[in-house]
Amino acid sequence: MYGKYPKGSYEYADYKKRMDFLYMIILFALPIGLFVIGYITVGSKRNVLTILAVLGLLPACKMVVSLIMSLRVKVCDEAVRKAIEEHVGDLNGFYHLYFTSYDKNFPFVHCVATNNSFICYCNDEKVNEKAFQDHLKDLLKKEGINDVTTIKIFYDFDKYLKRLDELNESQADNLPGMTFIKLLNDVSL
Image (cartoon, rainbow, N blue to C red; front, side, top):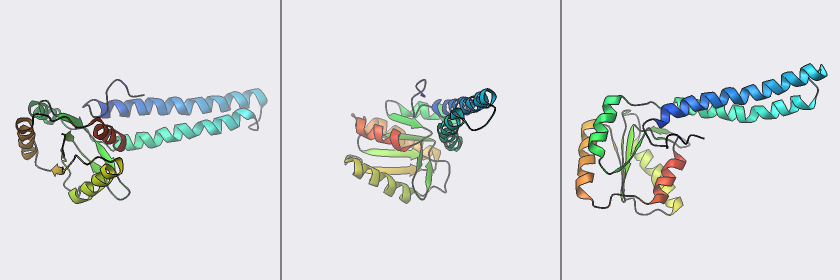
């Protein structure tokens, strides 16, 4: 549905917002159209098309929830993006990941996954690093991923860029397993 830009790319967050809005309009237009057609042809609300229209509202309402959640993701400035691109190198980076748990939300501007670590830059200092570490460790444990030993959130952008440079220099094999990347995509907005 959002195939033009993969999740984690810089363009994905804005593209998803636009597409969710478009799909929401279409998904509401179809049941309204069915209802109007049924009302005009029968002259009453009591017909099969009204039932289909009501059932057709379910996916439309689901799309409203998706739109509301995608509106929570804040897109970073172009200057931040350019600075990250200069330092990320061959690392596996993801923009605008938004993790949710039962208690807290964790919005990240940029994250990098390597074969044994996961680091994130967050511009909101209210995000609880310990809560996120526990949440992600629990998810990793459930999936049987034991390779990731370091989970770190950076609130200082310069320190994050420095850590990206260190990761680029220190590890020859920075590629995480595909199971880890799939998990990150599955559990984030």
